[in-house]
Length: 201
Image 1 (tube, rainbow, N blue to C red):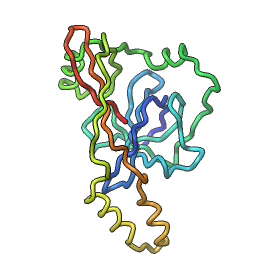
Image 2 (cartoon, rainbow, N blue to C red):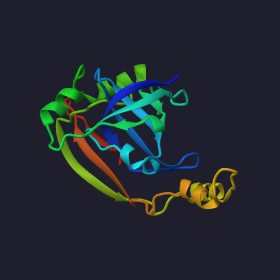
Image 3 (spheres, rainbow, N blue to C red):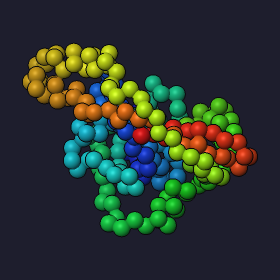
Image 4 (cartoon, one colour):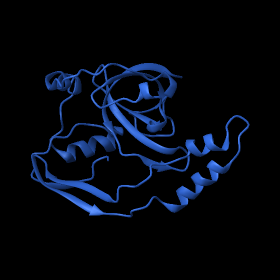
């Protein structure tokens, strides 16, 4: 059952290729009560222009619990329902801070956060490292997975009573190029333990 929620967008990942949904972007943000929410799947490039939201923007969207995803913050959006509110022309970081940290505080101990994730499934949170030790860039495969691309090509060749072959091909078109790098941070938490983390791209 869908219900309308107001979401403050904080995370938009780099597009990934999916056999089921073509090109997807994972989006996350906070609700008006400060709790986290993940919106997935979102074929961002296929949204209408007025529905393409930026970070630090409020949107209204009808969502339903994504029962195929065990993470408690995950919801499936009803894409036609997305309404993007006007974003302020200047960045007000005090206002952003009050929205993001409403009813929550950043974690500083990663072991504590991992234990919480194992206990209740938490998968979204704010973590503040004590020290950033470095930023690493590694080369990875330069092309999308060929099996996934072939599956999408097969779908694009299918005919439909309601769509032309060109429309189907456009629906399953993916981003032209894959970023051939993996990025990660190395940091310390408040216990002095070092970790490496690959952020959502």
